[in-house]
Image (tube, rainbow, N blue to C red):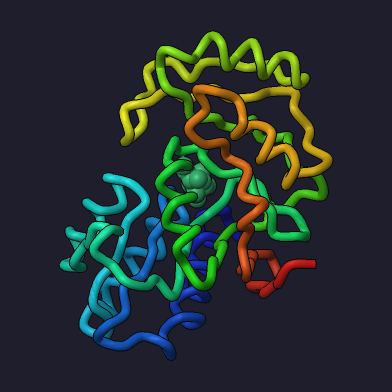
Amino acid sequence: MTQDELKDAVAAAAIDEIAPFLDRDTVLGIGTGSTANRFIDRLAALRDDFQGAVASSEASAERLRGHGIEVFELNSVGSVPFYIDGADEVNAHLHMIKGGGAALTREKIVAACAEKFICIADASKRVERLGDFPLPVEVIPMARSYVARELVKLGADPVYREGVVTDNGNQIIDCFEFMIDDPVAMEARLDAIVGVVTNGLFAARGADVLLLGTESGVERHTPA
Ligand SMILES: O=C[C@H](O)[C@H](O)[C@H](O)COP(=O)(O)O
């Protein structure tokens, strides 16, 4: 199977996972990226079965609206039973690296509000140790050089993602050569650097369920 077919398979599995719980009051949390897009496209068929969605990016909001799915501001929503999103890497504890598409901050906010985080990913995203994928860090623009120097002190090779402005008007630094032994501790340590808005480690609040697309079918994992 191609990677796109595996993404399609996990998007379909996520629909099966949430469909029995939808009602007219349900507002879903929706992530960003190519896997989340496939989920959004499948969600269109169910649009009359739930109220709408909160999106983690302007791109996902536009795609949802394009399918006739109402998009709500997070501040106007009481509860978010499910957050469905992809990942750049995920380990056995369902800690993740996210933010390859620069949407990490809004993703982390919507995920924090959700009762259940369902991660949808093809098998290439599953790793033993996080860090081969360069860890994204969203920074306030005026703090970029300072934050980069602090990241060097932590052992990373920080690279400014040129030309990218996040939905929040900020910039992204990608941390190369930065293997992560303790994702929970490192997530907190990075967040403590002045000028960091968010880092792409989703460990303190990891996923609750991983739907992993493999050659032999979709595997359902919970945290080890
Ligand atoms: O900022 C982007 C998000 O964190 C995505 O969920 C992540 O990059 C995975 O994207 P994709 O499904 O395209 O691999």
